[in-house]
Amino acid sequence: MKTSRLASALLLAYGIAILAFLYLPLVSVGLASVSKARYLSFPIRRYNTDWYGEALASDTVRDLLWISLKVAGIVTASSMVIGFLGALAFARYSWRFRKPFQKLILLPIFFPQTVLGLALLMWFNALGIVPSWKTAIVAHLVWIAPIATLIVSIRAFSFDPALEEAARDMGATQWQVLREVTIPLLMPGVVSAGLFAFLLSWGNFPLSLFTTGADSTLPEWLFAKMISGYSPLVPTVGVLTVAGSAILVAAGLILAWALKRLRPTT
Amino acid sequence: MRQRERQLGALYALPLSVFLGLTFLAPILLVAGFSMMPEKVFELAHMPDFSAYRTVLAQGYWKSVAWSLVLAALATLILLVICWPLAYAMAKVFKRFTLVLTIGVVMTLFVSENIRLFGWVLTLMKGGLVEGYVRHWTGLGFDAPLYNVPVIVFGLVYVYLPFMLFPLAQGISMVPDDARQAAYDLGATRWQILREIELPLAMPGIMVGSLLTFVLAAGAMAESKLLGGRAVITIADEVQTAFTYGQNWPLGSALAMVLIAIIGTLAIWAISKADLDAMMGRKS
Image 1 (cartoon, one colour):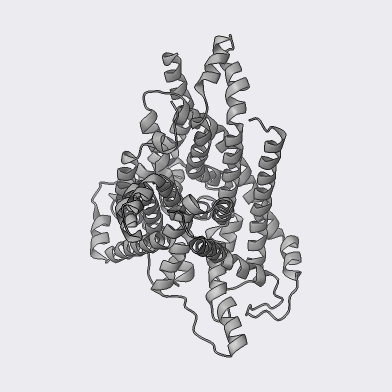
Image 2 (cartoon, each protein chain N blue to C red):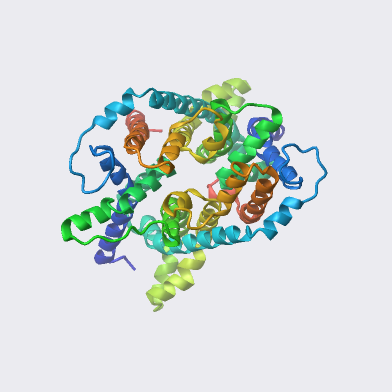
């Protein structure tokens, strides 16, 4: 019962159509960002890139960029560490509360982020903590650290426990086993978890909305501008943030490909 | 060895468990506490009187709850139909294109939902990408298909497509080719194979995808705000309004508890049935 040629071709066309559907709004944003007019209307009559110059020169955009970068950077580093340790508990070791632990981790991923953001705002308020970009890091981690743990776990599940035991039998200490065997074997998973963590934090809006206090991240600023009427800077800054993630993904893919070429055996 | 594994497991689980205890479970308990307080108070030092829940029942908030659930259910059903052929092709037909599709779809997840929905506004608005070019070429304009209920469902379908597609593809890849071949050899039609073989065997993937989509869509609000022009107020939107403009934390908390109860029940039910070790391929 092979799928016929025609059916395969139709399915391929369907797949391409779905991809086009997913990217169409980004095309609109991209076109809008190079339109000269202050009030956008298609078809675009005159193109130029002045809005990019303006966006890059603006202090507001620079501040937003810096805050978004700080938040995403710290979220990335923390989720890599938490995710690595969590994944060992999630996938590698048999311990008493492993199953409940696995289930606890899934709950924040399912949870509506707006409600989580508000609940955290109340919680910070109850603890007497003034929200700022630092509290946003905590909020992002509630959602991103479990995702990072799942990603590292996929790697940890395919990991042969005999390797650790062999090292231990040959006299390695617990710390040496961790440093020489466990960490190198899980590293690819940890790196992809870090990549996901950065990208998810960089683009997150609902959690940042309530937990950044007086500070603001790029997606928050974009949303505020979107609902208060059209500004030509919205598509421009939007394209810049998308370009930021795209560059990071490209770098990640190239790194993965290069590592594969360098070490064909592993 | 066993002893050491047990200790190490508990030790490594500690950072994440403590963190989630303090930043996930504790805030939910706080919301639960506030939801029982008299209205418009900002601390927990009052007698619980559950008046916020009475307001939820009396003020027609059930409509927002119902809308959120209906919209989420519609989006889930539409996604199931749209994603099935593609997921099937990803699992069984495509070879290299599966990787291209996977990367292409995952990439969209990294673009803020705001920007993508805003892109749809630019695409669909009057003078937007579609209407602008149609009018330019044919001279015929039409009204923007924005600010109504169908476009909210459209937005939900758009945003949550990856959450249906990947679990579904995973589920379909678990249908053995031999079973389909055998049914085909015994004279089953394409429709019978779908109904009798593929749907039942791919059921875990269907359930995971549908629940994930439904749960996420039920807690959504950006679609109704940006695309729908608030033609419908979703429950998450009501929660936000009660907290921010309303300055009524107990009411916001009670509304949040309603949403948490619905989503939590579904999520906990699904999670308790799932065997993560088997799903993620644990070896030993």
